[in-house]
Image (tube, rainbow, N blue to C red; front, side, top):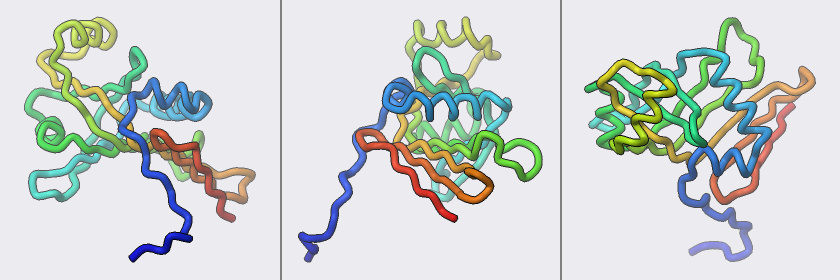
Length: 170
């Protein structure tokens, strides 16, 4: 039995491409993209066949309104994503204990791209070694955590179809 007087939170909408997130929250999207652009290597979490998590490093690219994940052929992370497209992507936090620009992570689904024209555009821009796996992301969540005024921890959460939420903790 449910309490009909309890406030309900609407479920998030369907996964969204990077461009929809960037249109909905341009300032946050610019911050997130800059955070990923500050370093080359980031951490990708995928799900192994038995459901346990696997973390691996990778590079990401923002092109044509999409967030792309490129991988070596036959890599375990690519095989994981082919089997179960859910992922979490953590931006490299950088050196030391500072949180310059904040801590950023993205959750979603990775969809493998085999379309020749799309792959050709990616190759023209990125020049990856061939062969390679290419995945386009569909976002289910973007989270930024940062320190404000040396006194507050702020957590911003965006999900498709929902307004940006921010929680501030002292």
